Image 1 (cartoon, rainbow, N blue to C red):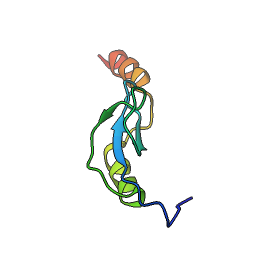
Image 2: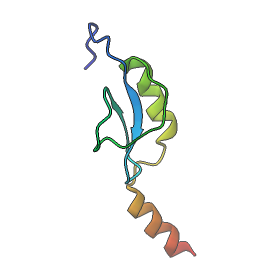
Image 3: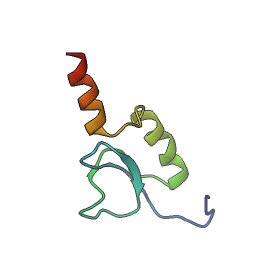
Image 4: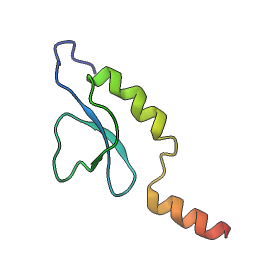
Length: 68
């Protein structure tokens, strides 16, 4: 649910499992910053653009290993 009064800047982050999210501040658990900082509603399309495969990284790797 969007808060129209939320003027914080968010960043697109990715964790060690290749899970993308929006974070309003950097912390040790949020992962690597991979996108520009923007308001929340502007960041959502950025996450949707880069996170096209919702499977965890470990599952994707196992699937790819099985194809080899």
